[in-house]
Figure 1 (cartoon, rainbow, N blue to C red):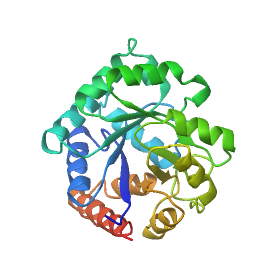
Figure 2: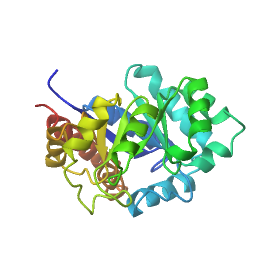
Figure 3: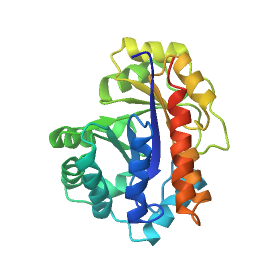
Figure 4: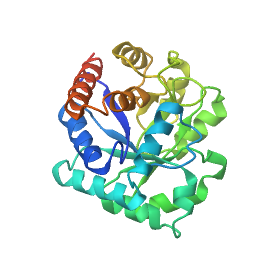
Length: 255
């Protein structure tokens, strides 16, 4: 098709359960190729302040994993083919009975699961449970990964490969750096699934730079969540801005 994928991230339950469901509709109807969705957690160590505050808003409004799965399930009724990836933290998964979190995520309609604070070294049990539930286990490629680590991640990750555009936590206040083409080429030669760049993606130029370096797509998290935070007092404006942002970022994926 000659284009890459644009994938917005939002926190489920933010700013509240009903509005969160409506936000997913707005993103899907305006060009999002897939969705990356967070389940709110009280100590999201990989996230910067924008997404941390979004998680707190969701928790304050009563968001729980079960209610988040309900949002996904309802979305799936009208959008059977939009890929859905969950980005969560290990405590949410470990806190459930063995395999139960994975089963509920799969039944709700999720396709993949990325546990932000589980490194590949400790991932075997998580990968097995994901596979048993029919979910892809996704792993992150850190900027300092050596060739051995790149091959290991290429072997383990399924669904897509999350390539970090920079070090640190999430946030649009620090821009991404251009992905290293050699690393992306090595991942692909090692059999990695489609590679999407995240962290610091906030404008169309970042999408174009990512694709030019060989990425198959780009994820925008804090930039998307910032629109929600900025428009809490005007929900109609929120949806207009989310729609415009999604269309603009998607347009940048067309080569």
